Image (cartoon, rainbow, N blue to C red; front, top):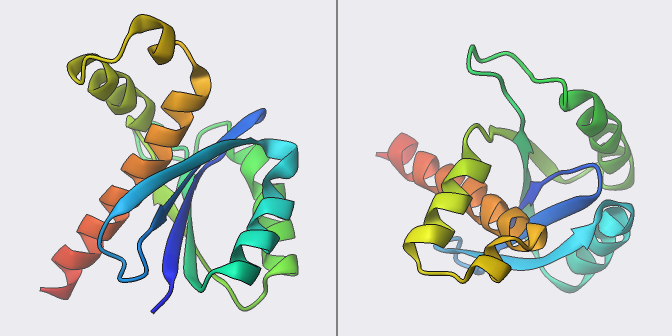
Length: 141
């Protein structure tokens, strides 16, 4: 069994999270510059067994894809070309940034740390992956 990666894709930075090899828990990885994401994924997947990549799908409150999808679609196309055998799943990321900021507040994180955008990106990726894992468990029941 391989890991599952999650990506909170942004125009400048991407939050990354990965499961353990048993796909039980999600852990944040260092936030990357978007321009470094493809090289990171190739390298990571060459070193670790990865079964799936989950990418946050920005969605409006009405459930429609948001304007940000126009930046994600080209990345998805490139990813499918460089990793054609990889399972790629889009996952609704509504409210993940809000949840990440709320978790930082309730966790007592200092203001200077909360203001680091990379921290919120990493937490958002972890929230995306946790939600995906929980939904899989629910579907399997």
